Image (cartoon, rainbow, N blue to C red):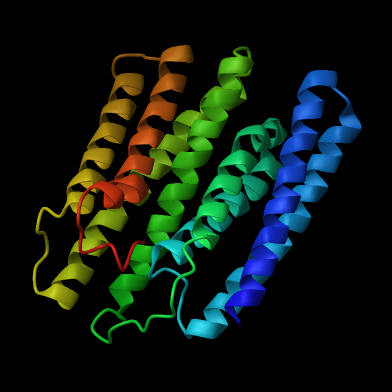
Length: 261
């Protein structure tokens, strides 16, 4: 069934690529029809993306979150879902497809090239706390990513106070989600490995990410950092999250290598 997933995911890449191209044309010519085209291509790509994830879930008999292939595909899916839902409330965010879709192309393409084997989840891992950890990890990635996207659009349209409001509040939501993810992960780790914390590289950097977001929120609320300063902080803090959860395992060995969330 992996072959069908690959076909669906490459079709997903094609539609997301088309959406990115349509947004490029929109930015250059301001043609309203191109923004609609981009949105529809994105929706069609998301449907195929969802189908590929469901096939993977059926194939392995568990949630798609155990290896880097499953994590990249599912995290990208979550980010696009949050982007679509929030765009309904904040139409200005739809222009974030200019940033979102190229990232989706890279992550899905890289994931497919991993051609992972099916792996069983150890019985000691399959606990309530694992699901809490996974769900809040997805929420953390989605909210921090959208915070960065809203901040990037704000830097282009600095008179848009709604974007400034949302990139800051999404950073706050991301801070909360990261905190719950770390706490539930510690409880789950105790059940799975007999310890709450081992200063594993991903554990350490997840804590650093959470502290960086705390500093970000502090500078905005207490020191009054607004405008471009606050927007750049949203982008920089998200890049730290990306490094912590995706690139770090390429540099250092970690117990999360075969169970990246």
